[in-house]
Amino acid sequence: MLCLPVAFCFRVAEFRDALDEPNISLVRLRELCFSGIPFEGGLRSICWKILLNYLPTERDQWSCFLKKQREVYTQFLKELIIQPGIAKANLGFSREDVTLEDHPLNTNPDSRWNTYFRDNEVLLQIDKDVRRLYPDMAFFQRPTDYPCLLIMDPQNDYETLRRRVEQTTLKAQTVAHNRSGVTNVSSPRKVPSSSEYEVLPEGCEAHWEVVERILFIYAKLNPGIAYVQGMNEIVGPVYYTFATDPNTEWKEHAEADTFFCFTSLMSEIRDNFIKSLDDSQCGISYRMEKVYSTLKEKDLDLYLKLQEESIKPQFFAFRWLTLLLSQEFLLPDVLRIWDSLFSDVNRFDFLILVCCAMLILIRDQLLAGDFTINMRLLQTLGSFHKAARWEVSVYPVSKPQGSPFTAKAHHQSLVSIRVAFLQPFERERESERENWKAL
Image (cartoon, rainbow, N blue to C red; front, side, top):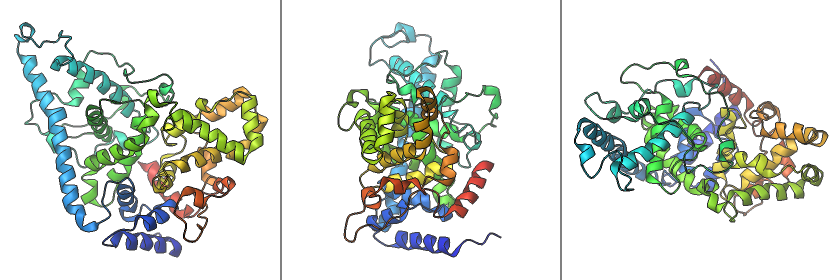
C-alpha cells in the first residue's frame, strides 16, 4: 500500500477544510488551487465546478441547485435531440412531404429540413473532431459507466446523433463558422479509421459520444458562434475530470455538469473564437501581441531574435491561447496548468505569463536556431512534453500582505515561473501519470 507524504496529506486536509465551510471562501480556495489541486477524493472536480462559477459558494444550496440544473439539461436533450429526431423520423415515413410547404428542397431559412441539414454540417464536424480526442489514450473510446438512459432507451424510436452521422450522405467539411487560420487550432493528429474503434454493444456509448452531445447542444443554444474547431479540446479535459471523479454521485452526472462548466468557461474565452473581434481589446490578436510585449519586457534578447526572424505570435500563440495549452502538454499536465488558470481572478492574465515562460524555457534553442528550426519547434505538438516533466512549474511565491490574490502578485519575476509547475507534489503527479497511461 502506497504511503502518501505527510505534506500531501496535510494539503488534502486543507482543501477539505476549505470545502467543508458552510460558505466557501473563494479567496482561500483560489490560493489553494493555484498551487495545484490533488485528485484525491474528487477534489479537483469540485474545485473546478466552483472556480468556473457553476457551484455556488453556499454549500446548503448545492442539492437544490444541482437538481434544477440537471433537469434543465434533460430538457435540452429532449428539445434539441430527441424531439427533432422524432420529427425527422416521422417526416421520413411520409411520402407526401414533398408536396407540402416544408420539404427537403425548401430553401426557406425557417424550414425544419433546412435547419436539419445545417445542423448536420455542424454535427459532422463535431463528430470528426471528438473521435480524435487524445488518441494516445483509450479513455474517450471506452464506454461510459453512466450512459444517458434518455438517449439510449430502446423504446425511443427516433434518429439519434449516432444515426444521423451514420446515415447522412453529406461529406464532412469545415463548418461555415470556421475562420481563416482556425484550422491550425484543430489537432493534426492522424484520424484512425472506423475499424480502429471498438464496436460497443447496444445500450452503451463511448465517452466521445457524450462529448459530441455536449458540443452539439452548445452549438444549438449558441447559434452566434455555434461550433468552431478546437472547442473539443476545451471540453475534453473538463469532461475527463468529471467523468473520472471517484465519487459516483458526481460521476453519474458528469455530462450535465460538464455542459454547464464548459458553457461558463466559453463565456469567458469565446471572443477568441470570433473573427470579428480579433482586433478588439478582448480579441485573440490583442492577447497574442500581449505575449510578445510581455516577452520584450522580460527577455529582450529573445524578443529581438524572434522579431529579426519575422516569427509572429500568430504562428504559434494562436493555438496556445485559444486552446489554453491543451495540446502542448500531456493531459495530466494540462489539468495541473488549468488548476492555476481557473484560480486566476484576472483570467486569463496568467495564461500570458505561462506562454512567455514557455518561450523562455526553450530560449537557448530559439537563439541558436534559424527560422525553419524555430518554427518547427514552436508549432510541433508535444515540444514541451519532456520539458514540462522537469522544468516548467509555478513557485508558490508568497503574496504581499493584504494584497488581492492575482497571478501578478504571485509572479513578480517571470523567470520564477520557469521552474516548477509540477514540482510541489511530484510523487503524486508521477502516480497520476501512471494511472493516465493505463486509461
